[in-house]
Length: 416
View 1 (cartoon, rainbow, N blue to C red):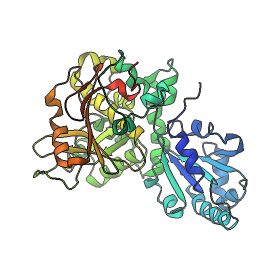
View 2 (tube, one colour; view 1 turned 45 degrees about the vertical axis):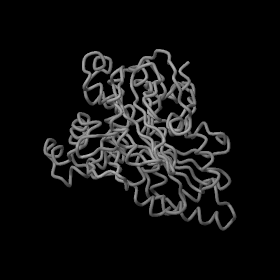
View 3 (cartoon, rainbow, N blue to C red; view 1 turned 180 degrees about the horizontal axis):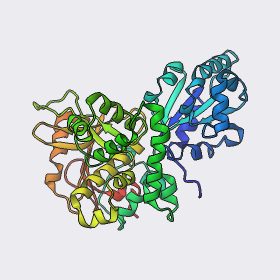
View 4 (cartoon, rainbow, N blue to C red; view 1 turned 120 degrees about the vertical axis):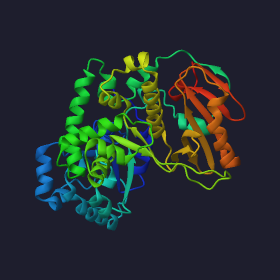
């Protein structure tokens, strides 16, 4: 398969020039290894993977000698590093030795399928010496190779009326997924995602948590799949699965730390409204196609016959596109008052705020902007723009910096 350039590529290379160690994490099979093997310095790097039983055994047998044996003049890329936490203290020693010799950057690039928060030995050993970057599955823009970042465009690009060309929403969602099923149309997706879940259970989840009953993890994520895009009631979910609260939280944390799911916190900033705000986070799945697999539904069938479920899937898709395009330092939250006025996503960068509402209807109206207008009132002159993303073809103004934006803007902002 031809290499698809990733948005993170340039930022990763820039970071390696300023830090001794970079930890690149993200879901299993999201393309971390492929990315590292296609960086501009690939001919000058030493690649090791702990997917190799021999490499893993050597690192565990004598981690000190393993690290000391690595070539000093090259960038050492170590894949699936979470499988050998024994090497972490010796990475610190090696970095400090190189600092004494005047070499302070570009020493190690580690990749892993576990969130850093699930690897306390790594974070504790390398605090102050490490930058952490996250690679997710293809965004719609990465799959189509348009090189666009719609999050940046929301803040920076001038909007004007435009009629966009027609597009296939179902295909756009299907392509914004793991590289292998996205690029190989012959793959049986049901089998692929089943194998993927089994691999997670056997390898990554066991790495980050003491899971005694893997079948409960399957029950957990299947039940959470029916709540995607919703405020999560953890007590009810735990009861439905049959877990006590502590076990439930441990299992859910394992799903978070292996990038199966993610949560978006509630917006809670000083504001000018005399209203109470909901404090619960909203839950989403990192891959929308994995979500439909867990629902045991076909996306085309849902699109044709089940608008309610499709609305949740559409919102989940937009949530994943946002996190794939987030700018470093940008904050993401959701906005909901106690009287049910809401904005699905709130983006904050520097002193600017943008709101995104998601509507499945191909026709939008002024009532769809109610929550965005309330957000604008709450933040005052910090408000940059409010948009309603919908599956239509016209980019339309609904007032001062309020826009209805076709979903195709995510990957094709020119509309041509």
